[in-house]
Length: 291
Image 1 (cartoon, rainbow, N blue to C red):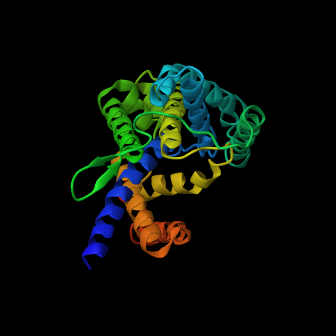
Image 2: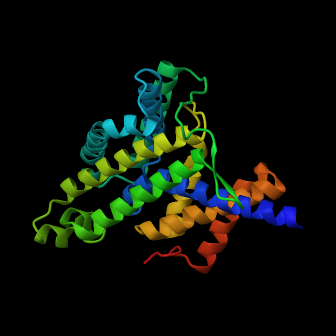
Image 3: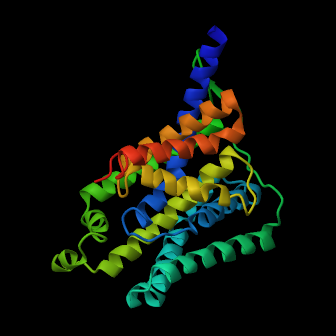
């Protein structure tokens, strides 16, 4: 009984840390999908691009994986702005962003994945840093550094973005742009420009999520597909446009998945976590903290 209790505590703690990582990779979709109503299914591909930037910086230049990505954040930001501009000109301006817009992001996903395969092959890649191995011993539980660092990174990203959105004019405009563009124009803000900025932020956070991913596990170009459903599920479960709700949903899914994998086997974890999603939405369709 005591051994089961200890195992349960470890599973819950590890699940919370895993949930912090889920928040790190989901925050970009919380912006693009939750606030802009743009279904960017290519998001996991740009998470992986961030992972490979961390890999190159670490293996070629000997730079810390997270620092490697932070150095390149302006490039990811500009890439996101460019992606939105193409999407806007080709689809949104013509009010044709539903099915064809989705096809655009599917094409981006395919191009990015094939490009990564051509450059890096299908071999698994990993990084070296002091926090990739080892544990922080707190007596009752041991916290793996490879989970703790992405957890802290994810919460720091969400916290910084929440402050930006709540306390700056551009941040408040991003929250309003999908709700009332006419009111936004009356405040002398260009909705297209605001969306371009928001999409740049979405790509930049995807890159940081990629740094967290390669710390947790070795990566290869197609691994991002495993996260597409989970990322969108977290955003919907938390409530579209709600960062606190997204964090609660990410932590919940992390704990549920880890407990299920520990006591019933890893193959049951995705089914149980999506079952929790369906039950929650049946009780509260707007999500945990949705409007």
